[in-house]
Length: 496
Ligand SMILES: *[C@@H]1O[C@H](CO)[C@@H](O)[C@H](O)[C@H]1NC(C)=O
Ligand SMILES: *[C@@H]1O[C@H](CO)[C@@H](O)[C@H](O)[C@H]1NC(C)=O
Ligand SMILES: *[C@@H]1O[C@H](CO)[C@@H](O)[C@H](O)[C@H]1NC(C)=O
Ligand SMILES: *[C@@H]1O[C@H](CO)[C@@H](O)[C@H](O)[C@H]1NC(C)=O
Image 1 (cartoon, rainbow, N blue to C red):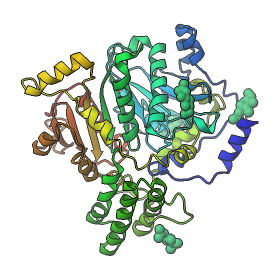
Image 2 (cartoon, rainbow, N blue to C red):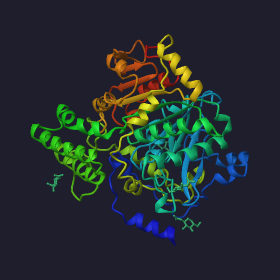
Image 3 (cartoon, rainbow, N blue to C red):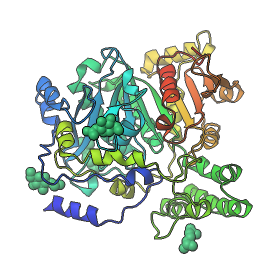
Image 4 (cartoon, protein in one colour):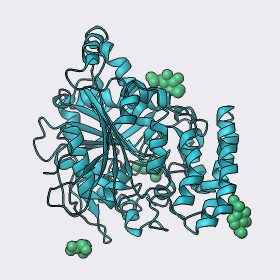
């Protein structure tokens, strides 16, 4: 009865658009009608009773239409009181799976499903219009073991049975995610020794620092240690206040606002920032919503009115590309649901998640990010190296590689807005970052085109990728793949 009520409420809600979720929201995933979708697979009981082999065997993904690579999926129960469960889909690397780094991918939103990243950005599959899958060019799964998790609870296939099971803060997000990760490494102990990276884009610019900071804090005393080696954040909404302050100028300079509209934007952004400073999160949310999103209103946002565009992920495109929605229909197929062990469970569009997170929207995770950045490795011979080493011995601090990347054509977390927030992030490399010369990055030495630009201080890398927007790996598959390879394997930025 309780479940039926929740379902009814979800179905009767006006679909609301999230800051970074508008695109995911349009994806419709239906529950299957007649053919058998199988049963959802809950793995926590197997982990708890030590039936690791059995649980792992059951989680092996079955065949579905089109190309298939070996993968595992199922649910991990992260809060028994509220029956909160996170859905994961794991792809061991196609090359050298025994030693390849394990890379966690988190979608933004809040409330965007990581199935988007899997099917649209860097998983092994692309969905065709006729709902078969084909192999992607340059999937990240070629070199890395990719772990896609629908996060936080209530996103995509992840669910909870109680309103209190939803995350309301980044602490809640990190707590549930950490539980899922420790269970994952119990189910797949052979991957525990491999390097681990937390990555994601957009609103995950908050989740990634949150989970990395949590791991960093808990690792010294944890039974299941997570071998955190670094983080990568794409077009991250980590520090809302500085990002918002940059909109009027940025939109004006790329020709989307005229002088008069810029003034209106300046006024509204200043108002939003004022409320952020006063910690009046609801007020800030309302003004910003009116300006950019129009979730709370029945009319289009000021941004939509003044640009004529409903898409703010790439300033060369006005509408969401059709093919980015195919995966929703694919995930509705009973044979796919059976193969990935979700049964007939509802795929959530994330609007409930967004509602529970509104007070989190404009809070910055800058202090956590700075803490992670402060633990970056610096070049040998540097005086600080000694101090870091000593600190490491005594406090077992994780030494972290950090990549902050932007798509040059993104609007919503545009490259100069990210740069703006890096300049006010108080970390020990700030002075060097301001002074360092930008490098020009080409994938191959024979390339005429430039792939992007890099500013590097030790193991901190800031990258701007040319020719791509917010959904960068879809726009620029080769450059994105080359970027993540160079970063994780420490190959430098010289052309091959
Ligand atoms: C379950 O969620 C509640 C509410 O967020 C929280 O107080 C509690 O600590 C959680 N339990 C576990 C085991 O994480
Ligand atoms: C589906 O579409 C793909 C790509 O257009 C094509 O290669 C494939 O043969 C089609 N499969 C079926 C069953 O129609
Ligand atoms: C956008 O235009 C519509 C129609 O003219 C109007 O009703 C609405 O108030 C405008 N939105 C904003 C935020 O000004
Ligand atoms: C899923 O199927 C079970 C019976 O197998 C049924 O009780 C339940 O209501 C269904 N859930 C949804 C969301 O359709």
